[in-house]
Amino acid sequence: MNNKLVEYALSLPSTVIAADVESVQALISDMPANEHKIIDVFAGIIMSPVMRAQQKKGRFEHFPPFKNFVHIIESAVISYYRGNFIGSYLTLIPVVEGVMLRWLGYFGTGKKPTFGDLKTFFRNSYQRQPCPGNVLFYDVFSKACDKLLTEHLFKDSRNGDAYSNFNRHLAAHLLSDSQFATRENCVRLFLTLDLMSELYLYETYCSDPRFYLNEEDISLEMKEYFKLMVQLHRAEKILLQDKDDRKHDS
Image (cartoon, rainbow, N blue to C red; front, side, top):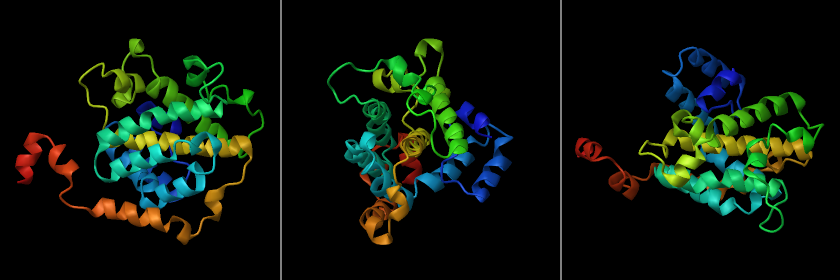
């Protein structure tokens, strides 16, 4: 199933349950027609306020490659919940590269890893950790991340377009007028980052702080996220809509 999903710059989230897999299995036979339905399923899993709070408090604040980017990731989450998908996408897209650089031990001094090193980061993961934990899931998710990077996010623009314009080079240089900062691509970015945190857990055999979280640990973030989701008359909704949509709403 995941081999089919990565063709559309998607992957099963690491926290799927059997019912989610069954839902996706029923939809995947009619792609790309059902792409948005599958993304809705994944968004319901990874973009829920509970999950975003758990990722922040149980993963990103603890894992060294992610720690320095907690506020940037949080800014992207806030923008997503406010409906500012442009802000969310452009804020989050450099974090993927930044996390990999920190993972490789680069903090701004010394020899910087090449773009080729980053592009094959998960393909060459055996060089970092030949015996990762949870081998079956590590294999599935590392292959998914490799495809997400090499065939989409880090794809050379000279070799054609990435699916759904999910590509860092396009975002960095605005190479065309094609839409790329969409809700769907925001979900793809958060999905990629979450999978990376899962793979870091498997590679390092560190404890998983997310497992020990209680309701009090995530209550502040969770409540604020819910508030953002239910706000009406947001500036983003008014000012970032297309003119035709505004007329329709009025």
